[in-house]
Length: 147
Length: 147
Image (cartoon, rainbow over all chains, first blue to last red):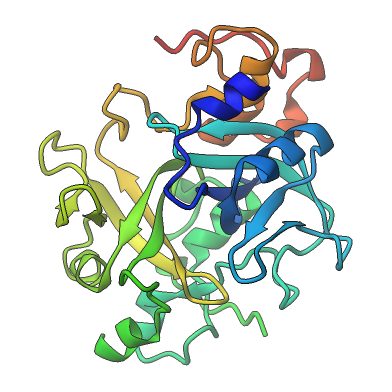
C-alpha cells in the first residue's frame, strides 16, 4: 500500500482531487480532496474519505449523515494526480438531500431560469442510467423541479 | 454570463476543479482546472476548455489531437467551486488513446497486478452504460487488457 501511496503525485499541499462516482449510475456525486491518509483510510475502510482543507482534518463522507459512500474500486488518472472513488452511496450525497451535489445547470441558468431550479434531462439520464439516445431531443431540457 | 461567472467560488489562484464527463456513458473522462476565462470560453465555444497551471494558459481539449469534448451542459456543485463539463467526446480523451484517463485501478494494483494493466468490469460497465446488476459478481474483476 505504501508503494501505491508513494506513486500518487500529491501537490505541494499533499493533496489530490478526489471525485466520488456512483458505480451503478455513473453520476458524479461530489468532489473533494484527498491526502495520503485519506486515501489510505478509504482503501482500508472502503468508505469514501477526504481531507477537509477548511478544517485541516480527515473526514469520512457519511460520518454525520450516515450517508456513506461504499467504495468498490478506486481509479487514478494517467498522471496519477486525480482519484475516483467508485462506490454505492447509502443515501443522498448532498447535504441538500439531492442525490448529487451537481444539480445546478449553468446553461439553464443562462437561459434566465432561476439558478438551481432546473436540471437537464440529459444529466438526469446519466443519473439514472438511461441511454441518451432513448430521449427525444425535445425532452432534453424538460423542466424537472428538484426543490 | 458575467453574473454567472461571478457566482463561482474561484480559489485564491482563480481556479475551480473542472471534470469532463461523457454524457452518453457517464464515464469521467479527465479532470483539470478552469479559471473564469476557461469557463467563459467553454460556455461560448461548447468545447471543454481548461486552464493549464504548468503552462499558465488556456487550453481546449482536442486543440492538438482533434479529440474535442463537445459540451452539452455544464453543472456546478452545491458550493459552486467544482464544475462538470458534460459532453460528447470526438475520440479518446486520454493521450494514451484510452477512452478515459482513469484506467488505473488502485485495488487491482494492490492485488499485485501490474499497475495499469487491468480495469475492473464494474468500471467498464459504467463506461459502457451497463447496469452493474447485470454483471455476475465473479466477472467483476475479470481481466481486460487495455494496452
